[in-house]
Image (cartoon, rainbow, N blue to C red; front, side, top):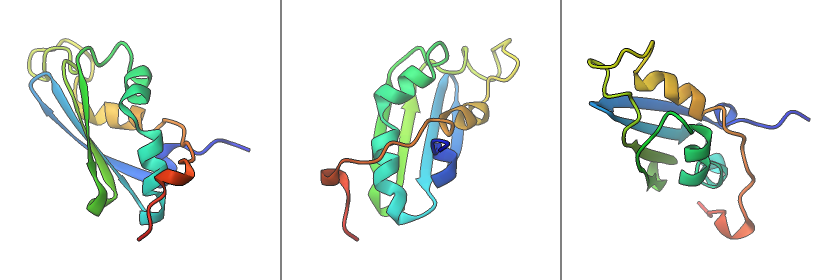
Length: 113
């Protein structure tokens, strides 16, 4: 069986401000929010984007929107306007983040709605 990826249960929006990437990931269905929370952790995202995000990663939970918001510092090679990277925009990194494998949440992490 092929493992599920975040893109199977969620979509993403990004923004870039200087050298900081903002990344929001929203579950398509409320029932998938616990799996999103379990799968998109700071540690997993840091490992997945190793070599790209050089600074801290902060995660904010948005439970009423079934989403997570990440602020990734030093992620855009100096910023869109100053970088010589082929694509220094955050949009490319949202596709990379959505390729994370989905983890099933622990029973204690499931929310009743």
